[in-house]
Image 1 (cartoon, rainbow, N blue to C red):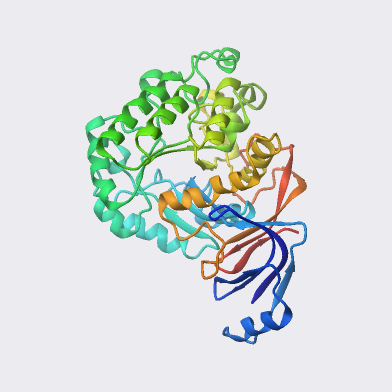
Image 2: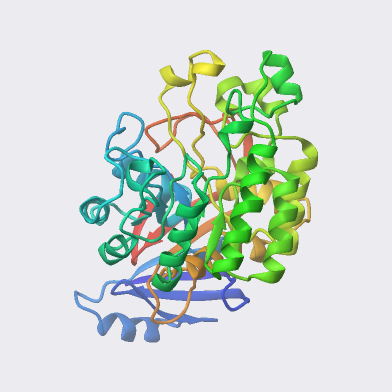
Length: 436
């Protein structure tokens, strides 16, 4: 049995906060109380299989929270495992405090058939964290033929997305939402219309585009798609998530739509609420992402939307790439940055410490909110629930050195000192990461 003592628990699912002891056994939370005395601990351990051994963690000064949940990660497996694979992606997740990860489906072969879903889930069970996967909306992500969403759901898909590409055909999207809604699974959309993009990964008409001598990706690429897709979701009364929102116009559209249809949600990435296009000038391809980093006005609009609940999920869009790929000229380098190992720290640095939101609010964005939207058995510390937990030092600091658990190191934050040090990640009752 694992006994965690003197932790400051923040459980956003029921707004519980305070110092407590937490007993874990058989993969579940056995007891959560102000104090668990030795005789009670011994009795709990005696009721478990094994020799009754109790491992004690003194969590004095540490915050305990539900294991973090990422609803938007790329582990590149199968097809691109030079960049990342299920095992290294899971290790990065554990190091960042994540115990549940939903993978995107832009791998090779595409996740457009039940066999592909089952393969990822089966191999994911051999990793130290909970691995889920979305399936594709369209066959081969080609945008021409709807995948068999019912069969994919029966195989275990957590949702549907062609992330990396938009669903340009409005009729196909409507058909997808009509099918996915009754299945109880969300559709998540990458909103970038290529008609407004000359070169991806840099804000069209902005400072960085001018610095690079490029036209870039116009903001209309995002907000025109968002406007269309929100309207379809409202008409079909279907759950929909706008992925990695980047523009103030997109934020305003989601804010208005959520007042009409509560099934609409939006995710923000740490890099979109932490950085602007200035990072592209400083960091080059390490700050090249789709949709691109935009202006300070856009960044503040995203933060305001987090504050008022318009954006209710923080997702990393963890996107590993090899060093030789990112070393190419800007227009030839792929878009994306890794994010699982820095997300919690960026949330503390950019949202909590400036006073925009509380730590409880931040943790809700990272735990119970995504769990509720994707119907995951996670996101709360309560007796009988799966024992997924992160213990972190909110006052501690660490320096991003470039030595990541991820197979890739394409982060623009290398060299920066961050607040919030993950000390332990516990998944299914097992310690899957422990800081040195």
